[in-house]
Amino acid sequence: MEREFLQKIRAFMEEAHMAPVGCRIIAGVSGGADSVALLLALSELSGAMGFTLEVFHIEHGIRGEESRADARFTEELCARLCIPFTQETADVPGYAKAHHMGEEEAARLLRYEALCRRAETVIRETGKPVRAALAHHREDNAETALFRMARGSGARGMRGILPTAEYQGITVIRPLLRCCRAEIEEFLRERGQDYCTDSTNCDETYSRNRIRRRILPELQAVNPDAVRHINQLEEQMAVLYDYLGREAESAGAEIISRDETAVFLHTGKLLALHPAVRAEVVRLAVFEAAGARKDIAEVHVREVLALLERQPGKRVSLPYGITACLEQGALLLKKEEVKRRDPERNGVLLEITPDFLAECRKIPDGRRVPVGEDGAYLTFRLWENFEKIKEIPKKKYTKLFDYDKIKGSFLVRNRRQGDYFILNAQGNRKKLNRFLIDEKIPAHMRDQILLLAQGSEVIWMIGGRISENYKVTEETDWILEAVYQPKEGSSVCGMHYGGNCNGISKET
Image 1 (cartoon, helix red, strand yellow):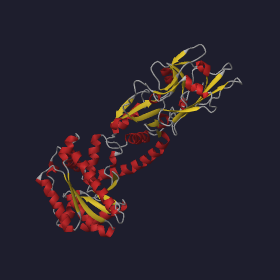
Image 2 (cartoon, one colour):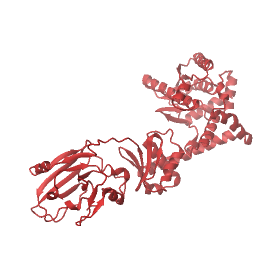
Image 3 (cartoon, one colour):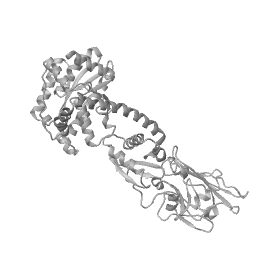
Image 4 (cartoon, helix red, strand yellow):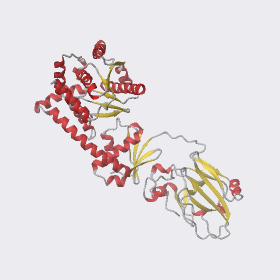
């Protein structure tokens, strides 16, 4: 039995590429049966597989003297085996209370973080690749599957415990994952090796203990191979999810875009996907917007998907301060930030005075001025309309105005309540807000649009149309040319959408 047990572990480690030759494995050992078996197995295999081994133990501060006795036991076992031993102490109850979580979750989090800190230290000191080894086995995997099912996990969660995984940049390996608890205990009996028993394993206030002590035995009463079958299902789900993930990444490259403030999903292309791939693309986008994966649950993905069946403007709140909002042609995922504007300036970036424009007559190439602090510029140039211009060039960021109709100063600013356009020669007006809605300008972009305005009248919505009042005609004597140069890599409206938003509006 002992020989078969070690061969089984070695074959699994080699199959999953857990231990490259020359690496350092840091085994998390609590003193319990599973981790002691892991320690003995790795100690036996280290020479043949070409890795070195050390042990890390964390004392949780939960069980008082019993917990400290576990630490002494582990340290003495390592001394007998001539294996380096490192220990940390954590205040799990205090951490759980401070962070409003259960002790079970807090203990797990602190174990992983402490193990990763130790791994980072070893990497700095030795320069060698490091693997952190944990003693999860088949029953643990089955418990995890049932626990995640009860919490509403989707296909991703049903992959179970992975043989190898990344945590905070450290590769975590689980060499015992294909071994069952009975095999582990038999291995220890044959070795004559004792171990510690954690009294909290009998405490059914912990969710996993209830699953282990009540639910799994009932399932095994239905079918003695229940644990093995659950593990087989998880292995199948891992393969299927790997395929799904690759399909989603490929589709996401066409559907997901981003700028400095948000992540966007093209709704038309998203809706064309198979529902399974669509959900996974949304999950990837939420992960990217949040900058994290923890606490992003299946319910959050479903909430975002449900927006696709609602009217534009609807939104949902997600973890990490993310808001998902449906807009024209796109789903927007953005971290909400408090925006503070100077009430005296009210979004004003620049004031263009008559004296400034008069100076432009003296400079043939015009005068260039920065707009805000992001690297954008406006260039103003004046010339006399000797040839009585007949055709106005239609360029998004270059506009010509009848200079003689501009009276007094005008501002470069963001929109305000009451802003309007003059639409035609009869002087008919249209509210800017209504115009933006009709042109299907996404709501999140409207406050970013720059305007040239006098009072509430919009002279030019930069990147889009100008007011009828200021158009150049054959009767124009002096022409004012305004050229906007966005900062490199940006656009005024954002290029995440189709329709009219390749500019801000249709050219006029």
